[in-house]
Length: 104
Image (cartoon, rainbow, N blue to C red; front, side):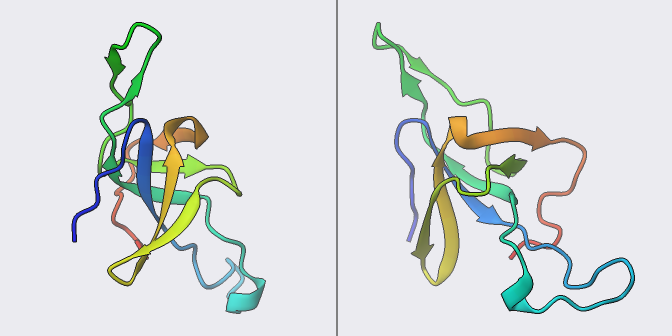
């Protein structure tokens, strides 16, 4: 199944953090915080302004981004967990980082 977000919505796959601390301590799943880093999977066409013109989004599929801790709505599509959020919930794009490294 393909999913295409509408307007200024973005589909994001969380990128899981390391399972260990730098000192070698393994962090159990119950103690982990949800990652605030993800990879953009799909983007909508953009939001309309007051004159009806569509303003394209600044992020694109493949970008690695940071977002707020409580941003987005969690959904499961074809057994994979995603977040759907507005572009305004995205804090910034991480540049020069491979997006698919440690993708969950």
